[in-house]
Image (cartoon, rainbow, N blue to C red):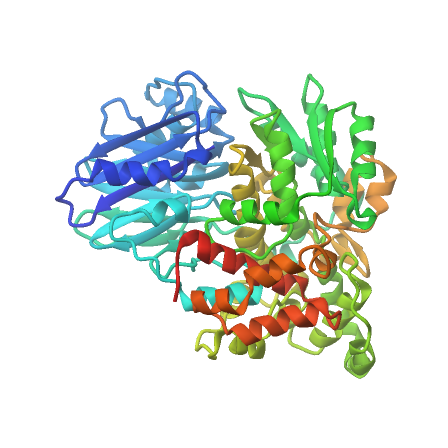
Length: 624
């Protein structure tokens, strides 16, 4: 795991300022505290901060081909690097290290930019071919690792984080109004947008190629897609469950490869429990597991995590926290390079901090819900189609329910359900999770923008066809947008804040290939979710976890924002502070806070996004 960055003079003549490249690299020291390196070659400079995981002695970056013509930097891990290396050695390539990054330069020599198609892993990389005067950037097919880019003053700049990219010469830190509206819509910013108008995210499964004399161009090289009806797997469910266990075990084995200690982030859910079980089978020593819990009982899953740890005799570490919420929120805001309103970043930050005290790599369960149908929204999607006008008729009664501070309370779920049930499929699916509706966004922004943030979901939805099951199409939207720009971004930033590499075994082509070919009934039926995954996990994990209701990795945000966090929220969202920043309407922001504190509605998710943006503005030093 590393942080990478670079600069290229698009005219192809001027050299790169080494001090500018160094400043970009230093901004990511948390991503790679073990070593740093750079190469300046004509119009291109590459730099890398290294977190040493594989080949501790000779794996520093950048790496070069035998003749020094090709250089590469890599953020992430290539799980099939050993097989690729053997293949390349048979073709006459000579290696100077034992690491995975060197595979890139030789694979490029064989396949050019198409090399990305051969890679199994999580990655963002850059390859510079001095002879062809070509720079290639690529991001893995699931978007596990980040990569931003910008064209500024005749230079192409790229980096793993915006904190680094924003230090590129001439970079202008103007907030993108479309990105801000997307943040108010989703509590995250979907690619290719970034919070800065000057910067864009390279999308998952894409390469960016620049050749001297031309402009940078992007191309898609991979697109994990759900199967059409005629391509669905129809075998006996028990046979499919057995196959899924085998595929997951293969993935976990690959994700355990490291020359440093590896652990598992263990919650009380099916996904992480299954990873622990398979890691125990694949390891010849006790698995190290890490769990946290909160004093509020409805948010504490330590008992369930302990059941898994006891069953597999793991080297278990846990922490029961009543955190200093203000201090923690500010630390999380600092760890993010662009604002995100996902409050689960707090427990993620804490469990990564706990794990980093013992290991340098930790496996995590991201992707299981999107691939196998784990969210309540998927049940709601199917249920709404059958209920017709009933939700609309029940709406007035449901809207009078009092607001609760409990975890995803019944009143919150019912209100969301009746508000969205009568809409078209994609809009209905979005309504279950929408942060601010269009009219509320217009009040906050003091304008109604021409850009509709939902268009990014519409475009993804349109890529799948009508002969693909509806639920699979909606899952695909979550897989390509929500997972990438919210959950994976959160896991990457919170783990990297502690120089911890987080790996996600569910997001492996070996696993996804089967998941994307499952019929709806093997994912969701009624209120039963993750049906095939639970069948596959049943022999491996305690029955209470298999049969338990999904809780998610969350905090008591609603209660905190009606109690101990109210003074902090009023300070961060004070009219004076909001007015000084200049992006949002102070009375509209205050109205959201007052409505939540007064108990009229659970607006904790909305408030978390607003606080995140305010804290980010101050951290980044930007104003309108």
